[in-house]
Amino acid sequence: MDGEISPEEVESRLDDGDDGLRVVDIRTEQAFDRGHIPGSENVPFDRLPDRVASLEGADRIVTVCPHGKASQQAARLIKSYEGTAEARVESMAGGLEAWSGGVESSPSTDDEGPDASDAPF
Image (tube, rainbow, N blue to C red):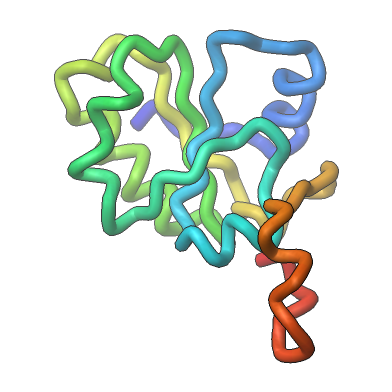
């Protein structure tokens, strides 16, 4: 792991169209569908060992979780993989709790019914 990156820097890089940046949200599919950073991809933490190869060749990877703790572990795991050893791998400080940018939700979450949580995270 190459340290932490602030949510503001992640937002700025996304706004600037940083093509080399991959934002990896490690929450469950359901949590991701409720709300996530636009342009991020969902790789749930429990599936990360099996899917880390999909990140091979990335220039910069930022891991994201609710509070910024589990994403540090995910960043360490990603950095230890031979195919991502050359990438800059960071955890987003404070997690989604610290994110003040916009969020998007998956269309399938619109019809979850009256018991669906309004909280995106």
